[in-house]
Length: 199
Image (cartoon, rainbow, N blue to C red; front, side, top):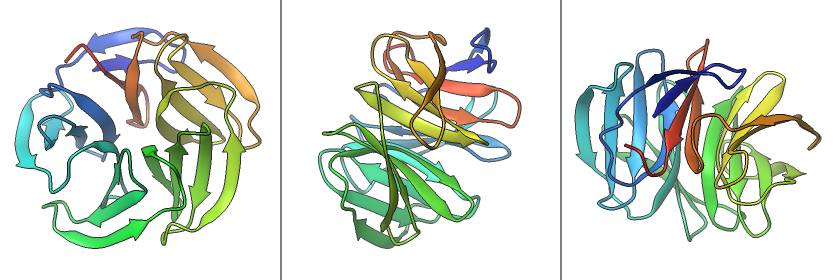
């Protein structure tokens, strides 16, 4: 993982502990990383020290977000979204009307979900109902975080971080730290970018 300024400058490299990381979110103290194979949830402190590793209840996790009370985990290759507590007890399973959901973020009582085929960003209510669709100019989106007033999105290949307004206009893009960024989170000051290869 990389701690990166919003200007794209690398501040520090931080270990994730994950062998095949797929999604990243943060609360005020910790980073949460979903790993695909084997399916695991890593809870790390901000220095990269793994505090807890938990076996996930599903394979192919593709994104993770938190509202500070719950975890929201998308499953790639399906239309499923799981809402759990921090011990991974499933509270609710939602079948989304989104093809292959990936990166996910929580903001102001809404879920922001990246979908593939076509590449779009969806703003949904807490029951997974789509409120708005935003077309993406870039393919292979992997993660999303909302830092008002913009969406910050990671993707595989090219400039792996780009910034977009809620109408789909690209504001800027930069290389960040990686050729294949797999997820993104924000700690209130800087971006945390999850690398799909470097762990």
